[in-house]
Structures are given as structure tokens and as C-alpha cells.
Length: 194
Picture 1 (cartoon, rainbow, N blue to C red):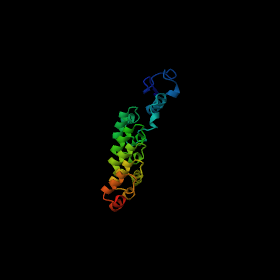
Picture 2: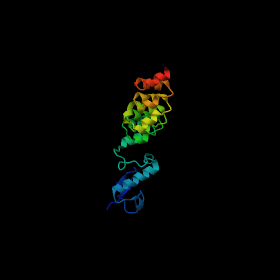
Picture 3: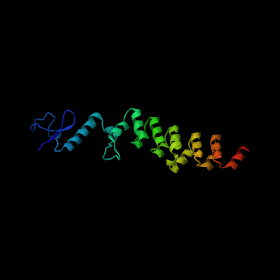
């Protein structure tokens, strides 16, 4: 029965050498099946070149809709590659933590992982997800945004017609004005400014 080894190109190949004379190593580098040889090659390449280590063990077996090309872009050092993946929502839960704001803004605009992005450290990302995909946000996220430190995000919540009672008492006139534009609490507003 022929054994398989990993050739000089790093891929499995049938071993034609006589036992003990293979230039690619002894028994520990020879396998009964091509699949076992491939597993060994993947492991070796990952250790040697870090090919798989950055992906956190993501593979076709454990990632629904796995796509090798998009996977490469997901972990690329180039922002444009990660934005390409973000536009498709590929690896959205990973890209939601991307250090580049434009990657997260792309996810927000496309409506991927909205509740995660509603808590983003950057107010521009929080605002974008609210304005473009507010309908996909949970009530808990909308409530958190109605308490946002940025007044224009609170105003955007009011513009959606949500949390108007609370926002009618907002410290910022712009937010209270949006509540009034929604036709809410006008009698209360008259007292404030009457």
C-alpha cells in the first residue's frame, strides 16, 4: 500500500521511495491516506506561516457559509479587503470589532449585527446604524441610544418617534424640538417656553 508524504511544494503526494530512503522524512511524515497527509500539511503550514492561526480555527466545518476568498479578505491587513467582506456581511461579528471605523460603518449601513454596532465606541457608527437600520435594532438598543451621550443620536431616536416622553425633557433644545416636530408633548413644550 502506497503511503503519502508532504512534498517540497508543501502538498500531499504519493511516496515512491523505498522504505527508509524518502528525502521527505521517516514514518512520522508518512500517512496512510491523502486526507491525513493534508491535515498534517495544514497544521505544519499554520505553525510555520501562521496561515490559520489568525482565523481562530475558522473552517468550512465550523463556519456556516464559509468562503475561502472572503475568509482571506476578512483577515487581510488591507482595509479595502475588510470593507469588501463587510459589504457582504461576511464575518460580521468579527468585523464589528475591527479597529477601522469605515469597516464598522459599512456593516452599520448594510444592517449587519446592528445591536452590536449600536454600542460601538464611535458615535458615528452608532448614529449610522440608527439612521440606516433602526428597524433592525432591539428595543434595548433603542433605549440605550435614547440615553446616548451625543445629543444628535438622541435627536435621531426622537425622529423615529421613539422614547418621546423621556426625550421631551432632554437638556438639548434640538432634541426637544424634534419631539415637538413629532407632535408629541406640545402642551408641555408650551410651558417650557411660554
